[in-house]
Length: 149
Image 1: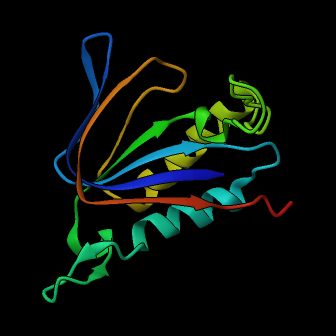
Image 2: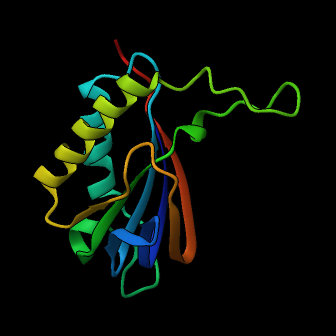
């Protein structure tokens, strides 16, 4: 499982002219799944996102979590995070879970986040999306969780 996490001001996902999900501030999370990912990886990542200390405290240090500052999570599926560009000019996506498996994992992950956090907005799995955000800092992190099965 791989997430690209951005500390964000206003952010939204637009699909065919309609807003699918939006937050005023918080985290924009691009997520992809690998073959072998299980609920263990999803649970680990959900906990990590809510408790990750990347928001500024009074001393301008990244010391506060989403749990401390509030805000939302904008969750966007993005299988291209497992794109491998080592050979040739066209990325290979062999490291990404099959679409049917990835959709099940995405739905489970979104449900887990909603169960642990009051404000979760989403894109739409498999859709062509326009993602807009104000990256604050900028702060962008890549978080990997290898499957433990």
